[in-house]
Image 1: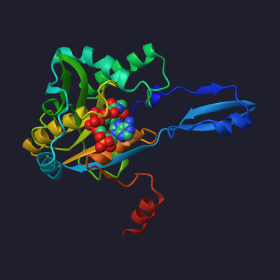
Image 2: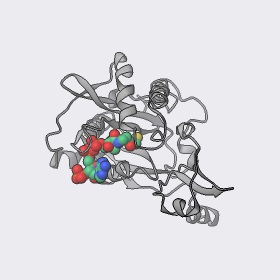
Image 3: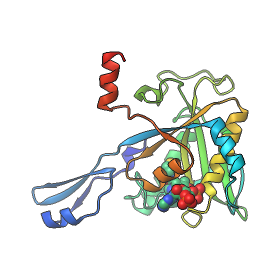
Image 4: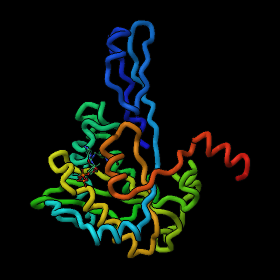
Length: 249
Ligand SMILES: CC(C)(COP(=O)(O)OP(=O)(O)OC[C@H]1O[C@@H](n2cnc3c(N)ncnc32)[C@H](O)[C@@H]1OP(=O)(O)O)[C@@H](O)C(=O)NCCC(=O)NCCS
């Protein structure tokens, strides 16, 4: 989940300054021997979208004139998407604490991982680039995960490689692996337009649900998922869930 890109941060702050420091949910804050340590502590939550409901909603309430055009991802897009990805996450964890050059490397590595199947087989027909005047300003990439209980840890990786025709046979559940919009475009409907295109395409391919993942502390992503109809799933490590599973109910 790209946690490897979150640096450990050490700050020469007093106890009182630590108390005043604004917090981000993806980090743990501790005073150790006179130094403040911000330790990566990412908490991932999952959310589910009913694709038919989402498609019906998009028809009734289309995105208000997003100033972008969409198209499928072309092989030569990946290099252009990396700077857009890096800019979108410049203040957002898990990449927001990196310097510019490292964030760019992280963007390239994450996109390469998605493209090459490291996040599950890439569903190219349901992945889109948003353009403004021919320049990429956003992207949305969907991959295929196993079709098990979406509240369980092991539904988020393939224990053995799936068969090559797994997408055609719908042997899994689509996962919204990345959505990113250039900061100049943010909040103007591009992300929702990208999502609506993916939803329509996934419905056409016969899929019923889209699962997604967000990091605690990424408020804009959380709000965006909520705004677009995603339902928060039970946290895989939830005590209540474990107790319920243990009691068999
Ligand atoms: C999250 C993201 C993809 C949303 O795309 P977008 O084009 O900015 O969002 P849209 O214009 O389609 O949707 C706006 C809605 O999302 C929510 N939202 C998004 N960003 C918000 C912010 N900074 N503050 C408050 N609400 C926000 C609001 O509910 C808003 O609804 P409103 O217009 O009724 O207020 C984009 O902001 C982004 O690239 N963020 C950085 C990368 C990231 O975190 N990606 C998600 C994890 S992979």
